[in-house]
Length: 594
Image (cartoon, rainbow, N blue to C red):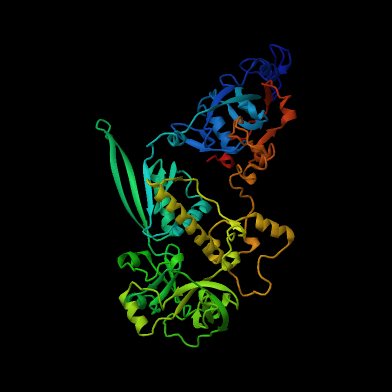
């Protein structure tokens, strides 16, 4: 009998091919074992995904929907979760290990997604097999709950009613631009506009609360909330409510003239009692038109002691003045505790003006300080308040005027373009235009009232555009788009500002305007990447490859991608191959999906 040398491994022959191998339970070499083994057994090669055609979101589970881009890691995570047999517990000895996953190109109209997976499995002690195969996902259209609610009447859960008790809509026009710029209207089911406000319908209470928080950050408001019981289930103790939130915006508006109470003026840094509302944000910004001193009035202070403006900004209250000359004013001393800033000091000027209607009739001229005097030059046309003939609604203000403590005129702003010379086509010659919200207008019951409201709305819109035209700070909070007039000037190389008016920093310049807004002419080209809409496409009418090249998104997310030519030669399932060690788990920390 042969003696076995110490340290020599005993080998046996493979039962299939006769190759000497280390003894194992099946007495089969790895190659033969791979030829008769299927690592992917029990893993489905077809699955179904549901996508909402309206909002382009993908269904996750339990009524939850998630927004994912094609070829993204998030969509890959969703696909892997829907593969049956792949997500077995790791404690099971029969479980497979996913080591790689990548996208395969599919025809855009096919409503299919293909993923190439590579898995490993230990079929016996010390023998690890690796196999690649293709999983096909069928995309089905299904409306999400939010999109279903858009097509049903009375499906809203929370209503936000925004109101302002004033006679114009300029504040809502400004608020509309803020909403559009920040996208605060996303998630609404419907928007309705009225003469005195707007209604926003939301599918749940949380979205309405976020919208109210946005309003608190941009305008001074106070909120009243209520709820109405729609139905209740006593057995499960579940009740269905509809919530209504009444939001009232502060009635003070830009360019309103105030005569503050003595106590309020003292609390605001001993500012002059005669102040002008400079602008409205989450606080009320005030400015002394004669000294340039500024102050901020908080919403709580206003609602605690409301102040009624002595003159409300409106076209009927404005008086046009022609500037005849100006002289710079430097304040050497200010009795206020909060001195006027250096910037406001440099803006002060004494203007010599005359009423536009008095030109050629008399030689009446008025000299008065103005906080916007630095903008003016001889020949300019501006608007202001005539405090000599106007009727004031405050008794203290009437006494101050009788005592000669009020100025004769308060200048508001400079008029630009054709609006200064009263041309009929002033609006057509404007260089910018604004985007509007898609809202349903609630018409008045009577035809005469509807016609009157339409005229008032057009007048308010024109007044608002003139305010925007003369206020650079206001324009910074909204998106302005180029008109054909601006595009023509840009092609001709004409500068937007005047050659001899270097001090005027408030007028609209071409570099402030944006491209891409086409009103009543289909969707913006920038949003579709220049690709025309096709309602038959499964991804909502816009093929996303028009925005990103094929495989570009997958490369950014670190995923493999097989292009159009390579996809034609990919096998549905490759043969299993033996490997020495396990590969890294595909779903590790660096592939954490949200």
